[in-house]
Amino acid sequence: MRLKTFIVLLIIFITSTINPQIDSMRIVDLTYAFDESTIYWPTAEGFKLKVISKGLTDNGFYYSANSFCCAEHGGTHLDAPIHFYENGISSDEIPLENLIGKAVMIDLSEKCLNDRDYLIVVDDFTKWERENGNIPENAIVLLKTGFGKYWPNRTKYMGTDEKGEDAVAKLHFPGLHPEAAGWLITERQINAVGIESPSIDYGQSQHFKTHVILTENNIPIFENVANLEMLPAKNFTVIALPMKIKGGSGGPLRIIALLQE
Image (cartoon, rainbow, N blue to C red):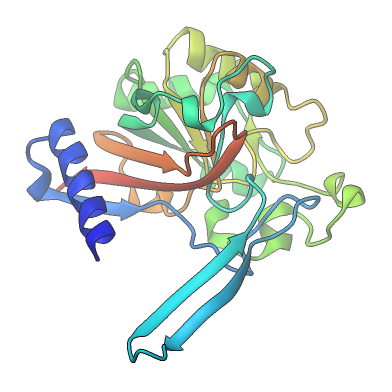
């Protein structure tokens, strides 16, 4: 109970420093729960929960405790820069300034749902900007592909429900074009980018150039982001706090959005 109270107070403190009108804001959870249905890369082990204790103890009080095991990259999760860049920072080294701040949501779902292999390009961003103004400097950019409606159906979400190395070639889902990733960095100086898909690179990628470009510039990546249909295009705040794994290449992520009512 004490830990729960501390976490609640910490969130209130952080969000209050971002916006003094926190009492008038709505919180949207952008995270999928972790269970046996959570989607992971075909070559990764899925989420496993082991019940250690559940029930009344000999002393008469109820006690519940579990252990869990999972790969760093699966479900709603973080890709730390070291994931694709040897000299990149690890999960525990990412500045909080890259994980908390103003955000925008760019809806590409119409194009992505019509083409499972769609690559989001610079023109998609400039079109959005003509309607909404420029993407703010140091923003967190969230990319809506529409694929969230398929979760947790692996076939519809990833293109295949097969597992193992041979399944990787059968992946089909949209992603961010490497040139568009570079544009976000050089022209808009973003702090982080997230996507409503299994990977920031599209399913048929073989060289993961978008990952490389972003991580070489120490840009954190959020994948399998949930509930983007509940967000406006702009004027909201994101708090994305991953498990702080020392030396980690990523990890489970709890990400929320704060919306002004």
